[in-house]
Amino acid sequence: MPSTITVPCPNTFCDYEYDIWYRNPNNKWKIRKPQNNTEIYLEENPSNTDNLHAYAEKVEDVNTAEFQIIISIGGAAAAVAIAAFLSGGPAAGVAAAGGGTAIVTAFSNLDNCCKKALLAFNRI
Image (cartoon, rainbow, N blue to C red; front, side):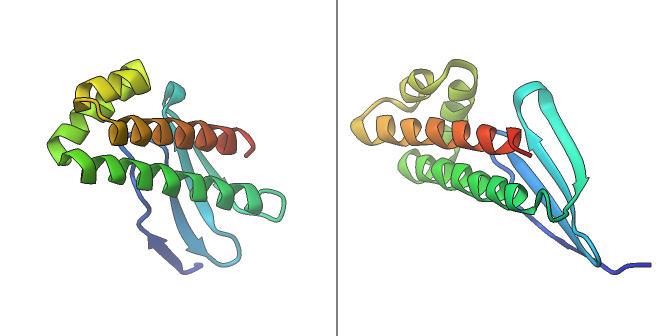
């Protein structure tokens, strides 16, 4: 039986996620995107490894963008604002967060990161 090491990976409010089970000979992945609650399990191989790691990088970017919003307005307010963003886009997130230039920039960045994560997911 192959040995398996599971490494916790970030879970984003925006629901872009991945998990990796490090195994020999091939790693197992679970990747997720919020559109249609799509979740895929697959084995890493030479033809998909670059795309899987690119997706993981984009998920990390979404996580960082969300964290910047949390730092700016606090955890509870950020959860409400990000939920508004998810249902109504960047303007809804900004409105829920109370506006301000830094918040506009933060939600614009989060929107861009989510779009890039979706593109990376679709390349897999």
